[in-house]
Amino acid sequence: MADEKVVSFKLKTPRFRVSFPQVWEKKSFNGSNPRYSLTGLFYPKDFTEKEKAQWAAIRAELNKACLEFFKKDLKTMREVNGFKYPLHRGNEKNYQGYGDPNMIYFSMANSMHGPEILDKKGNRITQENSEEFYPGCWARATVNVFAFDNIGKGVSIGLGNLQKLGDADRFDGFTSAEDDFGDDPVEGFDDTDTDDLVGDDDDLG
Image (cartoon, rainbow, N blue to C red; front, side, top):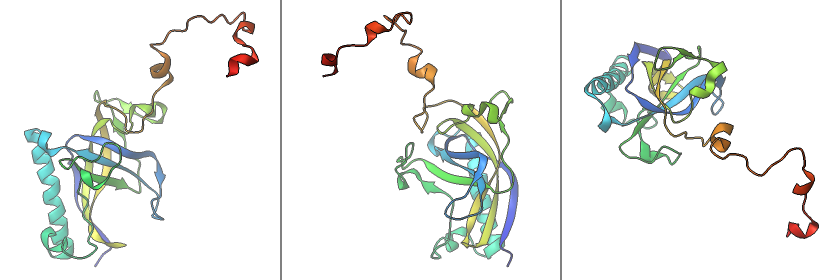
């Protein structure tokens, strides 16, 4: 049996919140080969009809990959100890943005090529404006589905390209200097005379 078999290419995902994006340079996880990756947080109850069809197609391809590679369906293989399945409920983790049992998350990874990223208007997001693509924003992706039997057995989802769809609260808590100071005008400071700003020792408390 081969170590890995890709079953389908360029499936489109429904919209998701971006979590743990590693899209500008490869990173190794637990000693694995360095790879580009991110995790998508999906909310199936909010899907449009089109998104429901996209979601169903991904799940169907996961089962197809399992049948073609292991000669057994997913329901059977998921009972095998150690079998890896990529979809997880949001309450399995307590990271920021997680915790919702109605949210489903899965990781997408590509060890070979960094994803190309577009904004909603079709303009490229690159490292020069990388701050536009951040943990917490909304996006969609192209993915492929594959089965593997190397370091463990399972089915997984590979990352193709990405499109940012919208903004939302950041998961990493980062704010820009403009966010921090923009609505707080400077008052009572004359940079031509700073001696008055130095108080007596008694002012130190």
